[in-house]
Image 1: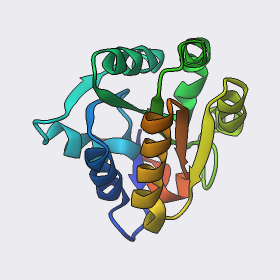
Image 2: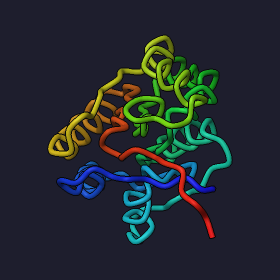
Image 3: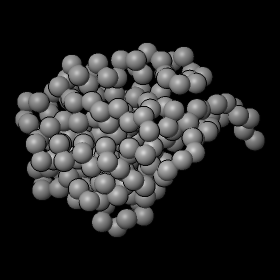
Length: 181
């Protein structure tokens, strides 16, 4: 058995986010592989001006983002809500050192979730970020993706803020088990 995504139809929101990140001069993109971010990841991989890094765990992305900033570049972390819990201790680095931070989080444990193990962290994600001083935006509509990504990038990089954009599970599509061959 394998999990598959059934994305919603509508505007190409990963492209809108990618374009906003390019306009914000983001030069590094790191991620733990995630089907919900797959189009955005492919766009970044196809762009020679963006260095992409595959992570083994999400907290590495917090450190990579801080290091990119110290080296004069802007970075973004892509992760799934189940990975937010892995980052809580590392997020203290952001508030202590006032590093800008931008992450886009595909949500699980919400709309049409099939896996009960995803529900707890899905519910806890906004509160975990809030407790660690990360401002949370919620992206519910594909039409808002570009504008929200641009606003989040400006707030993060121009004001040295930690920002998380939570992408609704309804936008990424319901995962379902399918027979693998």
